[in-house]
Image 1 (tube, rainbow, N blue to C red):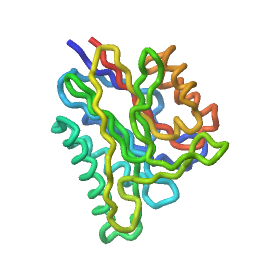
Image 2: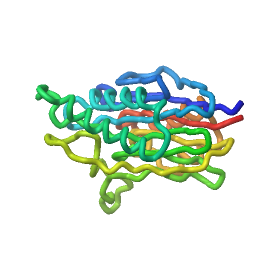
Image 3: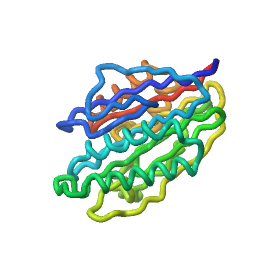
Length: 246
């Protein structure tokens, strides 16, 4: 029987005081905490499986509340998702839920989060995102980003930027979103990486590609985390590796 192996971890990094990232893998969520080591979960291929990372907005209140709310919504909605429109509808629902959660709670005003993830179906994988968290396909010919960054071009001489152009929540009044969703045919040995920018800001794509060519599952997740830490660990680091196998 074909199966999906998902290896995940979440870590505060070396600079932040607390973790505002959250993670969902099927019915399992990890919110605002640190894993001591990568965890691998195995699921049968055929049932819808959502794997996603939400990165609470720094510099604004309650990012960890927004990211937790989104992954818990996706955990509930995941089994019913069956295609592009369903994913778009789910992300729009998450956006409305983040704004609704601030009603009557001024301490949560303008909280927000990015989200990026994959929906694994029987014969396809849908990559989705809002914001600058990322989804990559680790293919034989190299690492390919399949999410779309909602961020302006970096300043000259810089590889990354912390600015984002759309998020779930994140403003005082409700703002509509345009989710990015792309579908890819699924085949045995496919691998996808879902991660927050706590990995991709300090670690270039070339280094991620090199590590994924050498390692898989728990060892790969550990080495990716280690690379981010050795590069200064400037932000929360959350990642999930999705592997399809027979």
